[in-house]
Length: 237
Image (cartoon, rainbow, N blue to C red; front, side):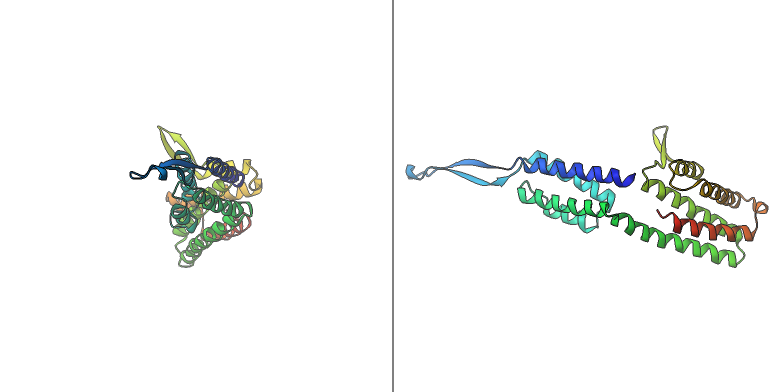
């Protein structure tokens, strides 16, 4: 599952941060006076951590946060700003941010927020499909509803750690919706009955997209939109 993979990753970063913190030390240096030898003494600088390990920890953490959220998110900007030096305090602030992210992942807050945003966008598209159908544009409605379903399948795959691309000639090529549907059903993300329904909806979308307008009617598109709406509410990404 994606949640477990994210928790493993953030735990690895927290472990790396603690390893950086274990390198805390004070550099010793000599203070000399050019006019009085009695003022020559040993002194220590401020506490610091290993600079190289800190840079590795910072780079890996920022990369993780950017991919999980984005560069404008407070977690990213705060980490970038307050965990920039090679000092124990910088490491501790970075660890605090990572711990907060871990709690969001563990408590499903991250997925809840993303699901709400995604659901709102998808609802807009399905409402658009309904409007087009009411205006007797059944073919456009079928394409939009089917495309919305396909994107929902991709979101479900990402949520459940299922690949959405495959390597072809050294490039990542998106998997087709039918393959995503098969992989999701195989992983028991939804039932075999849902798998059959999704297959039928995708077939209707393909007919609409390829000009096979006589293969379906407006009532079937209406049922498709209603079915996809119910399916997405019951199996959220």
